[in-house]
Image (spheres, one colour):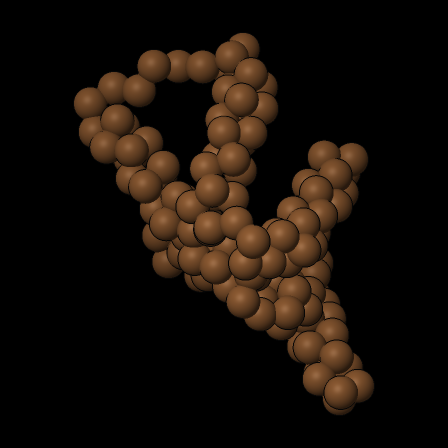
Length: 136
């Protein structure tokens, strides 16, 4: 639970920092620094669990890096151009896509508590966006 809360905290912090940087730095600069920090932290944390990929796993690993880089680049551009409260909630749509992929590809099942949590996230994001829009 501590790791989940820390992850949420630092994700929010990153969104705010990227927005504060604004258009001062090119999005590629921001993404490269982000990827460098992620490589160092993630690389050090995975050392005890490392298993060398075999065969097609190398392709999956490479595609993970390429698509992650592209996704982070466009997320950084969005956070630099739009207000954080409008761009950041779109990131959480991935929860819905991840759930749908889990259901269709891996035959996962979700408890009522999981679905209730997802519903609360979507409602919270919708209310946040609606509240911030109506304040203007």
